[in-house]
Length: 401
Ligand SMILES: Nc1nc2c(ncn2[C@@H]2O[C@H](COP(=O)(O)OP(=O)(O)O)[C@@H](O)[C@H]2O)c(=O)[nH]1
Ligand SMILES: *[C@@H]1O[C@H](CO)[C@@H](O)[C@H](O)[C@H]1NC(C)=O
Ligand SMILES: [Mg+2]
Image 1: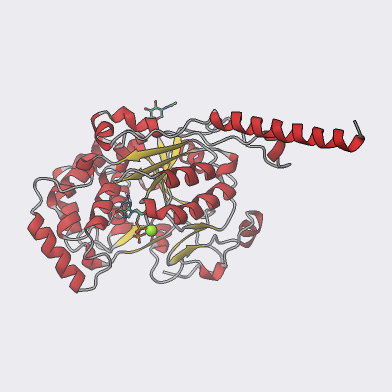
Image 2: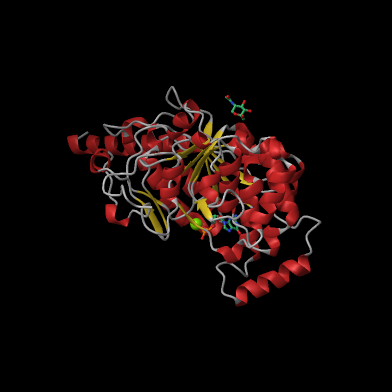
């Protein structure tokens, strides 16, 4: 046999071996099973059946010098009982893919936290494939039970419909949307009670099309746990009053009925300029949140949500989960349990949080323009947060009010 023929045979054999190897490695990957919706609803533990482990590439083929990912779920020592959580539609897949990629590149590739996806319709296989390939931790896909995404029996649906029509005509943002209202109510009162979320103590909410501009060099979940923080934010602003005309009346009713749930050293000064008579509309922007699920599952929070929910404003107005969460955090937590994450640089249309402090931005390899930072602009409430917590304003903003 000539040398070149041997060479060709060797090549053929190598190609054959590669194909066989590829086949074996792929066939060991479990396909996602998709039980019917009915089965999932009847048996809540069946939600877990759509849990997926990311594929592990053959290490020798893909090893990068800085970063060799351990298998899914194998988190480094010191991580806490926490997960990312995203509520999304199948059509959000490419927008959430961008968000995940940034969260992974800036933070989670070092930590491998899990990611829970929730949807009022079953996730399709594209959504699951794409997101599972991007997340370095274990992904879980949950269907929202219908009773958490529908009208409670005390709601007058005719009245709700009239509200939508009226708010639509008045051009109030999402004013005519029914699904947006279910979404806000779900984020206000139910996501933390989903069977998949019951497995965790802390969550980090991620929405489609967000950006992270800096490395997150520490573990925010660990920080929350070690410092007894219950709610973390990066952006705050004033709510659009036409969406919540009677929210504060509802809150005052709750405070009167449940004085036992109101914290001693709370952040009322963040929410009201007159000791609680009126709401100043300040809220933490809830499309970014790092928070305690155990707190949201507490009697205090559940009594609060239940009270608001019975007043009907999720449907008769258009109460957002941002003011609902923020007012709860402001009244039922101690001031020092609410944390501002200056180091986490964030964008959700149309606002940016770019950390103050040039050295911080350089150390964290930030790519945001510090002039875009919203914190010290007029429509932000962050200066009030600094004020009530006696925090020093950053250099250059000492005199802002
Ligand atoms: N499953 C599901 N998710 C939704 C629906 N509407 C909104 N969302 C999700 O809820 C979050 C907020 O919605 P978004 O459109 O970003 O609202 P905005 O940020 O207030 O403009 C996002 O994570 C969306 O993907 C819906 O009807 N079904
Ligand atoms: C994680 O937190 C949940 C909710 O508090 C708890 O039920 C579960 O036992 C915890 N798991 C671990 C491993 O600590
Ligand atoms: Mg959004």
